[in-house]
Amino acid sequence: MTVLRGDCVDVMKAMPSKSVDLIPTDPPYLVRYCDRSGRTVRNDDNEAWLKPAFEQMYRVLKDNRFCISFYAWNKVDRFVEAWKEAGFHIAGHIVFTKKYSSSARFMSYQHEQAYLLAKGNPAPPSNPPPDVIGWTYTGNRLHPTQKPVGIFVPLIEAFTKPGDTVLDPFCGSGSALVAAQDLGRRVIGIELDEAHHRTASERLAVKQPGLSSKFHQAGINQSRFAKPIMVQLQKQPSKFHTPEETAWIPETQPAPRMQKPPAIKPRSLAL
Image (tube, rainbow, N blue to C red):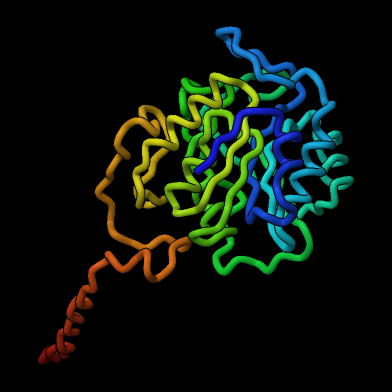
């Protein structure tokens, strides 16, 4: 586990080419975001970093692998241009649906979004994740645009295997890294802001191995510093889990088949 503090472009320049297996990241949206308490996101007021950052992401990513990048819908042209100039091609689109409105103007905004970007020609995963994933509210306690851990789980499960290296060059409070570490992946995070770097480092230092999408609910009152919420559900394996991960499910005998009662012949009436 490594969380580095610094400008991600400079840090990635020191990394070997083709050294990471997946890059899930939530970069600044270029929208000068400011939340209700006045918190802002560094470098959200300029795009000088945009193309250099994705050029380095493309370089350090292994061939035939994926990057998952969040973006602002009203700045999509800037992001798509940077992705394509770096060498990525668009392989999918993911919508994260919210049960509440983040803001409203012409529309009530109730989703976040990300593109699945491919380097080379990756093979399709054995269990493709859905392109619509439910969002749970984090309260943004650790970061002004904090993402829930749970939304990353099916994506990391699908596009990596245990032991693979996951890089988030804009790691913020570390949600993507927490999901990756819990799933047995090696993680590298990069964060420019001192406070967020400290938060991500502290979250990853509290190791709770074995969490998965069966039990990890990243929402209200669910933080890396608390025990995961355990819910007693009917034990059904997730399509995102391997047979080894579902070995805990006990075998049960099928219910006995009900016997069909014999047909009753109606009596004939005497006239």
